[in-house]
Length: 228
Image 1 (tube, rainbow, N blue to C red):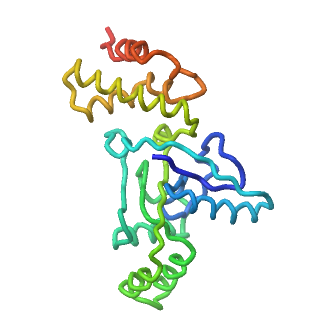
Image 2 (cartoon, one colour):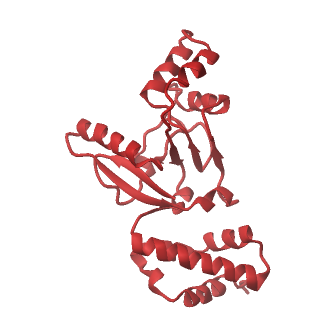
Image 3 (cartoon, helix red, strand yellow):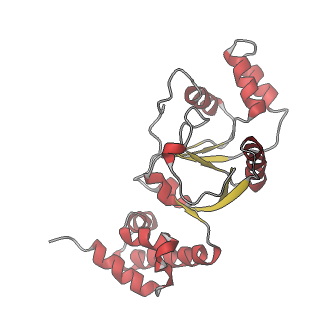
């Protein structure tokens, strides 16, 4: 999935230590599948920093949601669980992270939504009235938050040619693991994504993707051999 991050500068590498706390899904690096949403945010934060906003594009490996080494949470819509989670994370009494998830996906609590959350917290409206008012603003929103260093390996800055080739190579290698070792697809995917071979492949700076996929597969097999 192609995703976007709006900021006042291009993102070369993600530093979670620079991310703010008490956001919708806590401290983390946020992206969206909606480019327009990222462009609007880039314009806003660009003006704050007296510069032209920049949208940086990434590729998100959606297999992250099935990988056992990652703890993920997904909200498909505005609902009670999403609402409670937003309130939990936006509690300003402490800046500490309120959860232990690696990756979280769901709708955005933008300014309009946040104003209504504040009204709910101040007792001006009920939970039912909050959701009733929310339906008056049907424009879709979306965000994915990467909360841990471990999660960031599923997010790569886009280099179109290399990303396409990396995905093609990955599919071939996973298929080969399934065939040769009688793994199911999920097991094969998890083993490959957890390998240092995949880390090298997904880092476009190494240009590992320029190797023939069969050579990369041999390197992976050597890595997966039991250590004596």
